[in-house]
Length: 196
Image 1: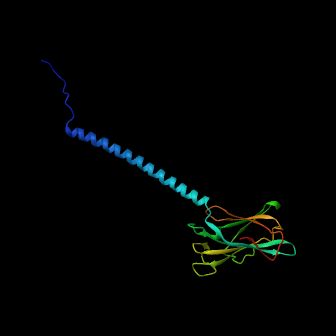
Image 2: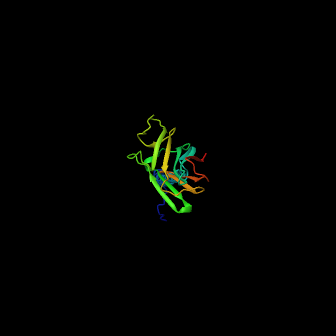
Image 3: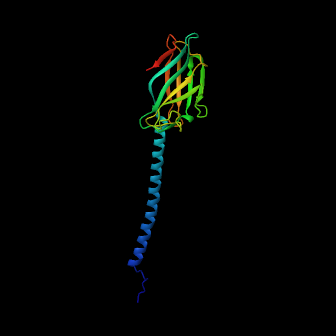
């Protein structure tokens, strides 16, 4: 008489349990991998949007750049220009916007901040040409869609004589710096258009 070991195969229930275990483990791993993929995609999308915001200027120049001149000393004493939001631009807080004036040939540079507390500052003044609120004082100091802000900058502390190149850079809190490259005309008058 021969004796054989009992080598019964899996029953249906045992096979089902093993199959469920494999499916559960696979589902957990796939969930983890998909979650990581979605997270990475979302982060890369945020980086792209932030990069576009930082690389593009959210404002643009409207109209001409007008300068006031000192005819006796033959120097430009102030400049006035108007800004508005670029198409699709985010609102800009002018309280956090920095204006930098650079006169490269003479090694001069100055920075100006607009302050709501000193709206009549003689160095950097903002006048609202058109405001959604219909208020020239512009309660929130944000440059928003359909609004225009006239910027006045005093340049009397700079030595901008005839034919001198200078740059005015407008740096909003978000977005690229908006440079305005200008050149003083050969003859200084009381009122001059530097850029049309």
